[in-house]
Each structure stands twice: as structure tokens, then as C-alpha cells.
Image (cartoon, rainbow, N blue to C red; front, side, top):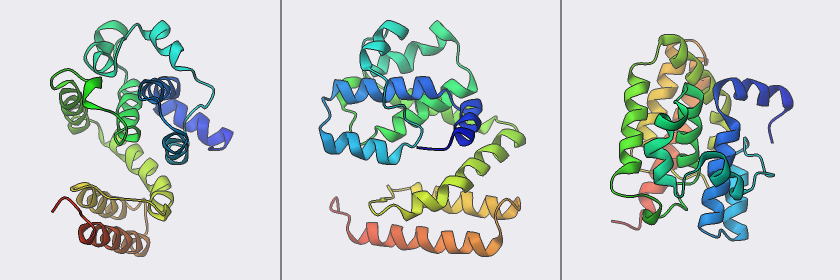
Length: 195
């Protein structure tokens, strides 16, 4: 779990309550086993472990995850913090969500909307995003079970280059991260069973 000071900084950028509510709802919906729950706890340092999934339906009135993706904005508005929370929840739970949690292209439509908003974000917002990534990148790369999906390596390499060019990260530090990303990507490519 992050320190109190870190959590306050994250709360300004991410709706942590919404993030925890969505993750708890997904965990309960899939009837996650101990290993799945522990993987989520390990990966998501922002998770509030006391949240119960029953609170999700009372609080938001959605019956399934795809409904939240499609209707959250019309019911509650969509602040940047809310959009980040929902996107993070989708990312953290991507290994356990099932196609039954969505109708049609609800997930893809939401992710396209996130990308559209990211493309129109200000330099200040992008700089903040890079700063958050910079702070979490070493922890992410140090995880023993860190696996890069196709395209993620390219994205992380781009972010490292941006962090170095914006002088958020020293060039030598960026080089070390880039080497680690390439190493993980090469390992994952060599162990890809979907070939």
C-alpha cells in the first residue's frame, strides 16, 4: 500500500473510490479465488481492500461492468479522475474480466474514448502522466511476473524516450529501463504460446 502522502497525491489525479469499487465488483462477479485476489492486490497498490461489491450496485445502479462503461458519464458526468479510475480498473482486471461482462463493443468504445481524450490532453496533463509513470516504472519492471502484451513494449519504450526528452528522467536511467523493457519483451516473445 502506498504511503498517506502518496495516496493524497493519487487522489487528486484518480477517483480511488471508483477504482476500488469497480475492482471489488469484478472480483465478486467472477467469484475470484485467493490467487486472483492476491494478484490484484499485488498489482494495484491503490486498492482499498475494505470495499464490498454490494456497494457498487447501491452506489452507481449498474448491473454489469459494460453498463458502467456505457452510461457512467450520462449519470454522473465524467471527470478526468473518473476516466482514469475506470481505465485503470479495466487494466488491472483485464486478466479476469470475461466477455459476458460487456455487451457488444462497450469495452472497446470506452477505450477509444479514453484515447481520444488522451490525444487532446494538455502538455501539463501529459507531463503529470509521465511523472506518475516515471515513479511507478521501476516497480512495474521489477515485478517477477511482469508480462508485456503486444504493443505494450513499444508504448513503454516511447514513454521512456519522452521522460528522457522532457528531462523528467535522466538519459542513463531511461537507457536502463529501455534495456529492461526490451529484455522482458524478448523473453515474452520467446515464450508466446499463441504462435
